[in-house]
Amino acid sequence: MVSKLNLHSEISKLSAKLGSDLNLIQGAGGNISWKEDNGIMWIKASGTWLAQAMEKNIFVPLKIDILKQQLSDNTIDTDAAKALADESYSSLRPSIETSLHLVMPHKVVVHIHSINTIAYAIYKNFEQKFSALLKGYNIAFVKYARPGLPLTKEIEKTLHTKPDILILENHGIVIGADSAKDAEKLVHEIEEKIFLMDKGIIMPDIQYIKNLIQNSNYRLPKYNEIHNIASDEFNLGIAAKGALYPDHVVFLGSGIKLYNDSVNLTSASAPCYAISGKGMIVRNDLSIGAELMLVALSRVLNKIHSSEGLKYLTKDQEDELLNWDAEKYRQSLNK
Ligand SMILES: [Zn+2]
Image 1 (cartoon, rainbow, N blue to C red):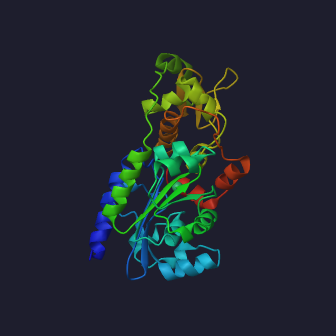
Image 2: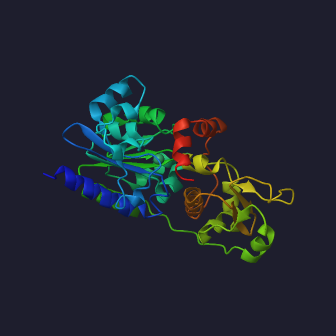
Image 3: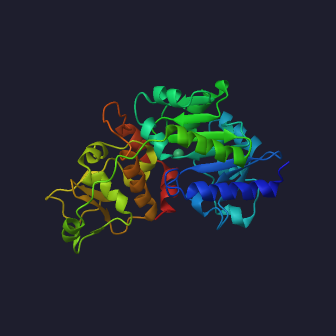
């Protein structure tokens, strides 16, 4: 039997590995949990990065029986479910997705924002696509709902089929397994089966952009691949129409804004602008977490060949993400 300490260190290693792959996790996105036989579930803390799991503690222990009671009362209060009063945990707020991990019966649960998954899950017919690609797996499809309790309620509707894999519409994937090793294996197996080729990058016009942003409130992004959102005009057509998954809204607002002559870049405050056919600019103080969401968008777009059948988040769905305190907290840690 794997001892408590071993599982903690195994999961930390797995978290750091998955968290450092931008095709699976971007910034503070995604979360991992494990359940112990003593009635404790450990879950990633909100706003922390899986990539940093080997450098510092990012997990909080919670009492499963208290969480279950809260879930049946429809009020999740993770602070009240903390299993240890230790100082090293008191400053950590458990993930927004705690209840998602709670309802999965597996020992180890991994939730990631895989680029390949998202590139399928943003289409109306995503169920058909995944069913064909992942034959033989215990898979369930979950309708889009705001992360947190609403998403957990949607997941609960599918659990009678005993899925090991949940595909979350307009969001990502959840994997349940008996061990860290099995979870890692399943993540990579699925990634291989749903792998989508990249279309390729259209080079940005860096000199043009540099001239435009001189002495302004904007700079070039740190990641070059972000430019492809705007240098490729097909991609920009999709990105400008709206947001396709929740983390984009939380960190960047709605769709990508287009730059035109009437925008004053010394007083403008949008997180970023697309200069059509040229490239992207980001606000001088844009956080690295937000910039990684642009990397995610660029990578998703780089796998998309058709704008037909795409499903965007509605205005109401965007608003409920922006006006949600738990998300404001998560974002405040990523400034
Ligand atoms: Zn998520």
